[in-house]
Length: 79
Image 1 (tube, rainbow, N blue to C red):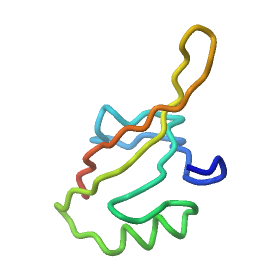
Image 2: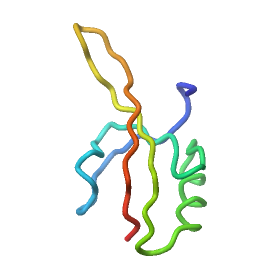
Image 3: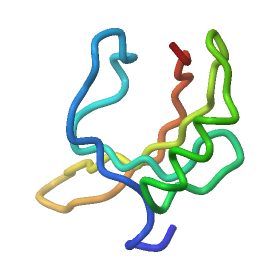
């Protein structure tokens, strides 16, 4: 994924799955690439209450003083 893609998670709302953490980078929601707030808004408008979206996040991981990004898929309930 390009380093300039995605949106950084700055805050966590109640009932957000525990796998989502502050600082994670949202890069994909269902089949849509997320590169701007407008991308996220457009994608969310197509979803309905009680849908479940598949979100792909990059999470920073440090191993032996080296930083990496791990890709994780999280099921997000739409409320």
